[in-house]
Image (cartoon, rainbow, N blue to C red; front, side):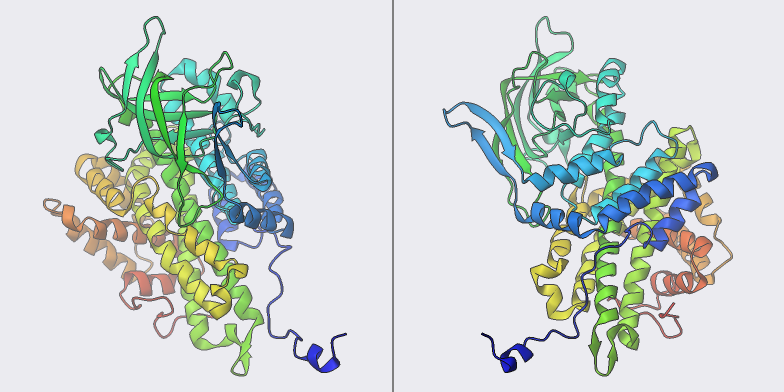
Length: 544
């Protein structure tokens, strides 16, 4: 038996309790306020109730452990069966399927045909990503495939109801036999990442097969390879084109989709990212026109970029929550850590970043709904605001999560805290769908080629003018910088960052408590903050 003296040395004190049993939506005040702000009045109560059901699951011990297990047991490739037949499958942990099932049931692939559909889906994606981010990849691609497929009415009529279904139906079978499907995409190749036109995959028309082509080539990054269909780019006789590649053909035979290996990644470990080969017998159907491949997929790219912003905002919120929880229950130097002035400065700075990211993500989701309804100004706003938000929010996510981890000290560096998983995940959204330079250059293209984009941006920012002198001065500085767009390519990151910060500042000035708006404008727009988190200037109400 353990002696009384030995037992006394193992008494645990000054450690926080488990952070479970909470409603991840109800506890997220900035998210709740943003949803209420943008939702139609008659829908607010129903949307909030729907999100709270998801939020209670997201905050439960059961689902959080499922997320941990899915991440701890990465998928495994099964290229052949035991008899040597090629099967090209990937085996996932059971919790991966549980997570996907709950997400699909919760509407995270169903946005395009519901009132306020993008807003409620983005809010749900924000809530549910906090459980485990990896399975967000197939959710995002399935959601984003819809606008690309709408380039062909016949294709959309068949696939869209399956893509937006609330039923998760795993397994490789003909799509016509399934209650719901998932989509993936394969755009990049070994010799070119964001430069998709440099790909070498070829598409040859199949004689007698209307709209059908045979593909030969490879894809260097193809995530979620057990999805039912993939959108891929290949060079057809008429130029770079978009194709729909089903994993299983209508007659039940498996398409030639050769999984060469799975990537071993920094994070995003629950999700399978693969390299695949098309051997000349791979069958795909043309979507849109030959030579219009990039134009066809642009809607998919735009939708997944918004998910990158929302996913990063979710990671920030989870990191912040864990940091505040720890410091609120941890004592040091004669008091709670959360009450120490310098720690409060750090936490307040992290909270600013989190709230600003959430506010901007939900504003963009609302813009999607309005643009879908025919609002040209909102469509122009998305054209410039989305790449700017993708640039700024996803890029600041990694240092923000790292600072939150440090709030836990050595405890945060240990896997059991959950913080290392968040830190490993943080960089992916900055890389996915075009890294920082791609986003900054896209902002520059919008400024140079689409006057409506700048007008929409200035109209949005103008709604907050006159409320804070630092905000107003920052707008003038931006306009001065944009007065000469020639030769800006080498410094395109700066206007992209300033546009995103001004959009965030506009939202906080209009809707956040005065202490929040004041601290953000002082530190992010007025030059009164430092280069690291926890350097808010004196006079900021950090306790609020």
